[in-house]
Image 1 (cartoon, rainbow, N blue to C red):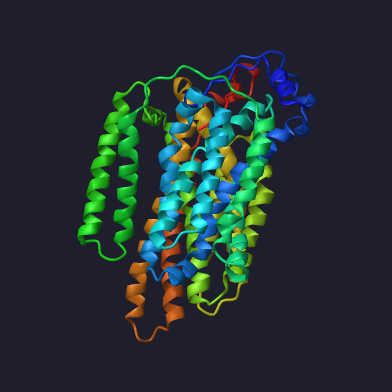
Image 2: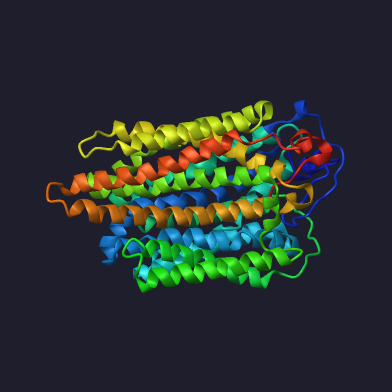
Length: 509
């Protein structure tokens, strides 16, 4: 079916634009039972291609870190910024997605973002040293950062009344599947080709995504926009980058000049950022939404989930390669059950949300994540691969079950006058939490390694096992807090009308 026919079918739905993205009133929405995935398949393919490519690269590099350290003769503290810089760059531009979409058109910005990500991938493949690679990864992140929020906006635009949970559950598959498949894909490239192909493979995929997007994505009207929040745009990256840098340097010494400078500069910038945002009528990130206790509880659970997921995806490859001696490809295969479980449980979570609401699914998911994290604390130096694969599968299942219900809960729990700004905040915060997870957990592992390697009774592999076990114990404690907070989630007042034709929200940033 042509995209114009899809737009006509959604005609009487009054959508609330997200982060300023156009709110349109259209006529003639069909009943739910007339809906078919085939009717929106073409634009969804374009969306999924761009989304999958960007998210996959977020974790693919994790498996390549040991090889990058060898090839560039660099330290782990420096090389890990290829991951942290990518996440922070995404966080920096996510809030701009709404303003840019309204100013220049969502379709145009989506395609430009995919193009910039593709160019960044090409440059990464030809990086001559680690500093260039970090710089080009930041460029990748700047391009990829706006892909996620605009992709989710298009998905909500295409979803008919009553089917939002089901369609978002389907769209959630690449969101969880890509980061879990990243290590498998990257491991094969590192072992059998070269690490450069982790980035080169994005070139044809990006081109295909752009061509399909030009032909199939619907045009969303441009809107008049307020002046850009330049102060917020300046302070936010400084705050989050400096805090991440300070935390990562803490692995060397918490009293060093670099650590203190990073934490102080980041802390001051964060305070100034909060003050600046609260004083603007249309800020870069709408912090007033935290006045909703339902939203605040939900986003804290989301932050905890993000730390658990991406912290694990970052640490496990390092442990398997550096401590256990597995190849990069074998490491990716060991992590594959997480991808499979996430892919299986994501659509289940989406469908159950339409019946049960968010709380039972989020609680169940966080309990499973907590159990998985605890199992990883029991890592022993001589354990077989099943001791890794089982908890990783549980982690994927827990995240798959709870992620999309939690995202939808956040949209519904926001005050109606601020709902248009919510997903910008949540997506940016997720990337910041990813960078904090990488920096913080790396710091814990390094500090525990110093303790265990000083004991002559411990072999290197045992020191690694003890260090990672202690780190996962910290993650377990964090996950327990997430499960407890999830019990306090309430059905938002907006939930009853959220899927009715007159109250459909178009999720964007």
